[in-house]
View 1 (cartoon, helix red, strand yellow):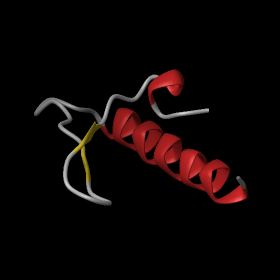
View 2 (tube, rainbow, N blue to C red; view 1 turned 180 degrees about the horizontal axis):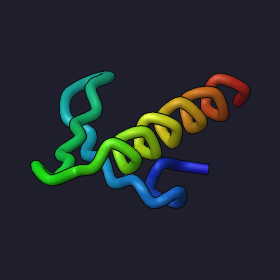
View 3 (cartoon, rainbow, N blue to C red; view 1 turned 135 degrees about the vertical axis):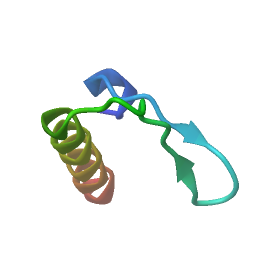
Length: 48
């Protein structure tokens, strides 16, 4: 499952770089959720 399907939008840039642009008013729980989505997605990607 991709990050987008989990509710996190990211923009691919150059090569292996992914750009995230969280709002300036992001809360700590929201930031933790984003980090978890990124980690989960990378683990799933690694398994493929």
